[in-house]
Length: 385
Image (cartoon, rainbow, N blue to C red; front, side, top):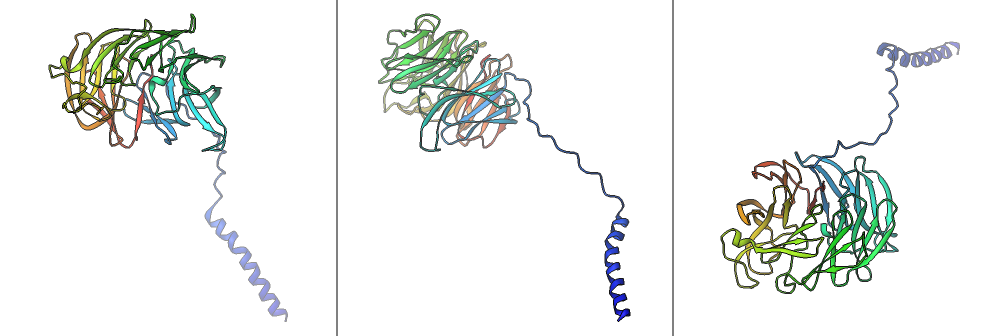
């Protein structure tokens, strides 16, 4: 009996000793890992080649990329059919958006969400009395050249523009009957395009009254593309009609300065508002981009009949606005839906292709810089210096 008990005790002691023996053979345990401290990534210093790619309804967010190499830098969340704009110094990113308290229903909330331009952290929300709810257009939402005001096109319950003091959050509503969009000019003004073929302008430093021009385009038979090319500092805009007439407009003075057909500048037959005429016409989502310093206009063109304004561009026409001359017609390997250009001495040209790619060119010689696939169906937005 004592022998069996002794054997059991010896076996138990051996089992207990084995783990210790194995641990001793392995040596001392490694030191404990240092405690991790969470942080927030910060984007590099802002520059003229920072690019925002904003998606439409259901996209979830806007991509921020380095235009030089296409590198992905971050994402800003977007509500339904949101508009996005940079502060002139890129210290803030403004998103005009709409959400509902229960996701797809409930109480509607319209606001401008303000994000830090480097950390992309939400800073504040400014309540809006309403905003237009449509496919995002860059001309629907804009920032004054000093960064003090935002202008948001509203259609609740009728056409108007919300003038937002970005420091205080105060909102004034300016009625713009029969007119659309909100294109900033200078420190205190915005312009709208009207359904009777005129342009309207408001200087918020004076009376909040809409000054309108005489009609200068045929809104029924040859309308203007909504995505105009704007120079806020100069207070000027370049508008294209569906047939390709280039309208140079003073936003501040609310008047047309010049009008001439793009085909004439290329030595080609003019396009007419004719369903049966095949001619070169502008088309796409964002159909033109204007490099202000060189006064070059980049236009997406395609061969088609009247009312084919949504067709993608198969050529990129480079127009010298000073000489009123098409200086180059660049064939596009893949049809392009949208075009944008940076506003610096070494400008980059951004082309969004129909298959969801991004092509980056040197805007001055049109040489290829880089390309990125699968960016989606997006609208390119660049900072205005």
